[in-house]
Length: 308
Image (cartoon, rainbow, N blue to C red):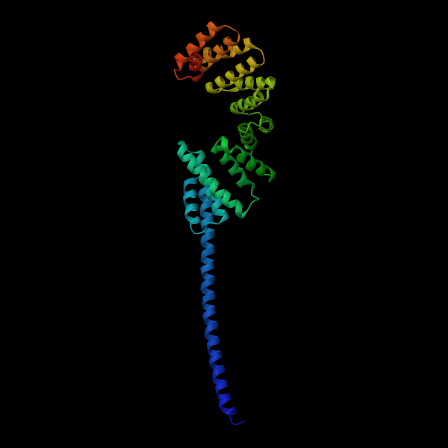
């Protein structure tokens, strides 16, 4: 009873202080929350604006600026899916637009780096697998298995770009899976099939030993192509196909047609020499090999014949 008064005054004073400190703290927290909210809104708006800016640049075809801006943004947000995808896609576009091999390789590597990282965040986007598959195709034959893997994954995710079968066909051919190659190429066929595609299909059929199908596609290629290099390649292959099928006269016609249509051709003369050699006509064979060597002194086949 004696100490009840002072305790009560102290309690009231302490309570008032608590109320005051609580009020101050509450106001301080409200200020922080307000500032935080403003900062978040500004950050969100900036991120939204950055995304819109990249999309506008992409729509305008300014892939170099998209690549540069997304790469800079990734320094602060290295695991941002949108930025990784934009960086990878723009790197691919820049790669296929290059003429220098070193630039192509650098951009392809950048593309693969970004898109592989993006797949760690989201692995169900067919577009990413599609571009990755084509990027690995451009990396070369050693990466054909990865090209096939990613392109097939894109198809399984129902991303059906019109050029997937063609890239798959070429990649399967690099792996010497010619049945897979033919199956993929067949899906690419249409009214406007390119001469290059016809030649590629024919090569796969020739590797399978299906000479009739190879011959049909090669003739179609020769008839439709306007490029003499493609026609020469088709005639050389057709000559080989006919030779392997036992039609030496037909093979000779194709090799001679190359010379008649486009002038002297070292490879055509060399293969004529091989044809005559197989027919036991060594004099004519050596004459053709000499012509091939005269046209191209570095022709490995012709030089090998005279160094035996």
